[in-house]
Image: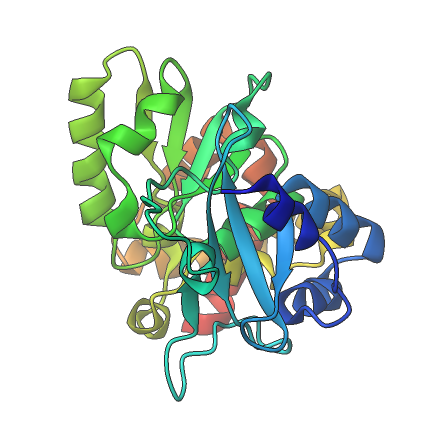
Length: 278
């Protein structure tokens, strides 16, 4: 797509409802950095709409997905219809052939961090602010994730963070991609599968739904995990998780070893489980 259209969308952030939502959970400096990092644009297709541009590792603008978000809940507007559109359709580009790449793919260039793949653009953006140790990409939906798209991940450590109720499907994809790309490590994270409550499964929550429940400013502070050292809390958590046939200590230790920076998240989720299941 034309880079002119791409650059002209980088304005109007006061009216951009998704950016307004980001400002409700992050400081302004963080929002500014996220907008720049992911090339978030503004569209006039609907008042307050956002353009999530797909830019590949060669800097080519592959596509622009236009979506409308509620600025208070951060959820996509689906009534009276699903507010999703494509920039090339809105611009009436004749002969345009859509060939998508990962949202955030441009961040792979000259970056050796392990890669984390989620479904939605919103989740990739939010997760990158909380856990910057990964390059966060979005497939734009579980059905979009395919071997062709994953070729750009060759030779990397790749972790899939599927939405709830999509774990088995992503596990199958990881196994398929591992066969096709043996030099690339594909693993599917089990964090949500371990800790999700039934109501969250019904809603199909994703990683961002958990992350935003934590204070971004304190997320990396050890102060937030001190309470987890209390024996009473540990005992309650053990009892509840054993009842669910989950080996709590082993599960947490595996997660902490695999993702050191998720220690705070897993410890806080331990308390969350106690609160929800008491």
